[in-house]
Image 1: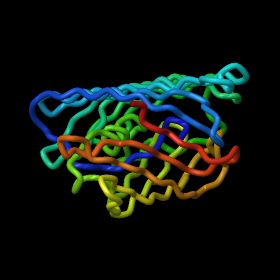
Image 2: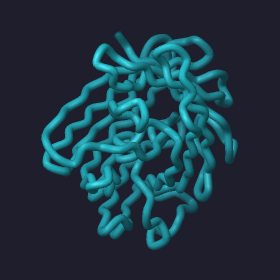
Image 3: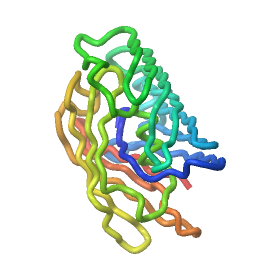
Length: 232
């Protein structure tokens, strides 16, 4: 919910070009707290994606926070997401932070986090993980209904390693509801929740073309129920 996360792998088309743009509102305990955008482009087996979260509403008047990240990488023939580069700037009540990760063959080859965390996972042991934005490409983009959820992925953001596990989707009308579990494996706690493990729920809805689109994500935090809901 802090911008890392919420990701798992789904099948992606390796060829051709496509672009997706979506805007979401972010609520905590029913109060509008922010806005999130997600832009994804795929072309000839490559992807480029960006996401931003900004404070909004009454919360925006009281607290200044944002998350601005981008990633690029390769889509394998089986739809596997392989990151090449990740850059993020963030501001929270704790600090402003700039993160860069370069990847080589699925393993971080250079990691820069400024200011550095007190403790962070060793990049050499993060092979097979995805950065938060690449994880968003894997789980949050439009997909065939049979391709969503039912998977697990590890996410490395330079400061912590997390695992997200999604169960098989359950059909509820034209919606697909996926129960998920977030586990923080290494690194410091997030601002919104200090728990090492907690549940969350992702809801996709079939559009007029039968494609499953992300509609809603929700989870409990230290400040109440947090909801990310698609606008429009």
